[in-house]
Image (cartoon, rainbow, N blue to C red; front, side):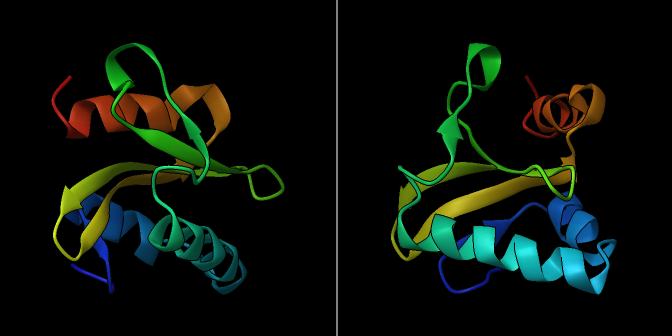
Length: 99
């Protein structure tokens, strides 16, 4: 899936589809930030996820984990849209990018 500048892992598409309407509205705002400035949106991760960044949606208990890219019209790849609890989103990201 692409969304004007964003590439999505198929699992991330599934993550997005599971969100309810109000969650999608807030996640869409985060995705817009990523599209506009992927290298400065959110905060960088560390350790084996150092090439990734995250945007937290504390009120919703969600985070978007993404990888900025320099691949032509694609500015970032969405890896995970997941729950913040128990570092689940980080574990999913590591699995999805094979770390």
